[in-house]
Image (tube, rainbow, N blue to C red; front, side, top):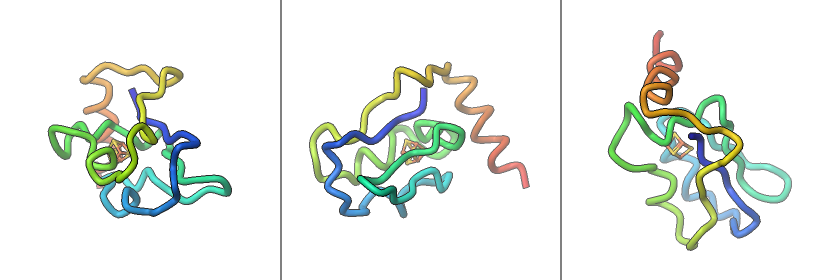
Amino acid sequence: MALTITDECISCGACEPECPNQAISQGDAHYNIDPEKCTECAGAGDEPKCMAACPTDGSIIKDPNHVETPDQLLAKYNKLHAN
Ligand code: SF4
């Protein structure tokens, strides 16, 4: 399951450089996560690095519209980093 950023985001930008997949970008209202690139940090660590970096409580949540298994997330990571 990819993660997503809610309206609670204060646009501090702390998460963006932490993402191993360059899935985070600044949007008009707040930062956004590209579900095609987010692996919940599968392949790069034990916990979502963006969540750990975020100073707010609840800005970054699991995206119920992008449900994936751990194996699917790892396969996505390996595909993103194949070259
Ligand atoms: Fe990037 Fe990991 Fe956050 Fe997904 S959980 S957006 S891969 S830092």
